[in-house]
Image 1: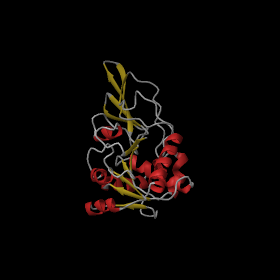
Image 2: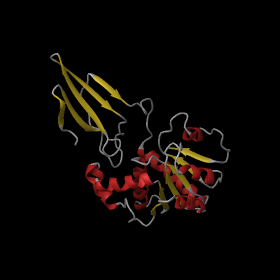
Image 3: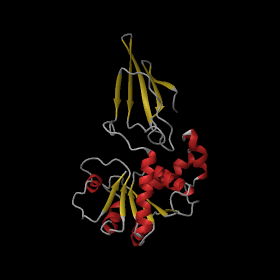
Image 4: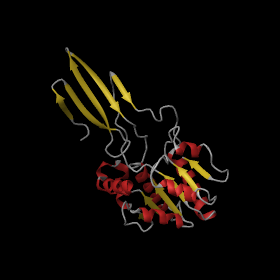
Length: 253
């Protein structure tokens, strides 16, 4: 659990703190005593953004002698949540209801997919987004959805109530989960009105590849990347327009 110290060795104390990145992500504080001197090490992978949905804010660490931390977004400013939502609404409305196409959203199975579903459902409930059929096409993402639903107590306090009202499982009529490869391929036969959320988030593998191959050439459809695209990945190439026709609609959040 978070915020409880333990001693894996008589000269070492450790404590996990909430990293606010995905459900269960942690920063670890380590105090090492050697030759009468104490040294504090702090290690973390990615840290969550302030004000994100679902997960709590990252814990504040007051001090460290040695700090090791991931720096995926260390050299850039994030777009505000409000601006990101407005852009997503515009892209979805244009694609589904003006061009009668489909939206393909490559998304990481754990954490990212759950946040996307949260936003889509909330925006629909608020009347800011017209109802659309949402398909989660990733077995790992489906499993992660059910696990997330079981641990609402780890959500941000301000969002527990809303999260309890949202359908993270098969209780919402517009949310569908595909399991088999055959079901996944059938999604490509939908002519319009669908949001297909599929892994992997950088389009480096997974079921999203056959959706891109089938649906991307049609100018009525759009691909929306909402997550980080590492240099050299297929997602990065698509976002930067490498080797794709000019009429293909690719967007990044």
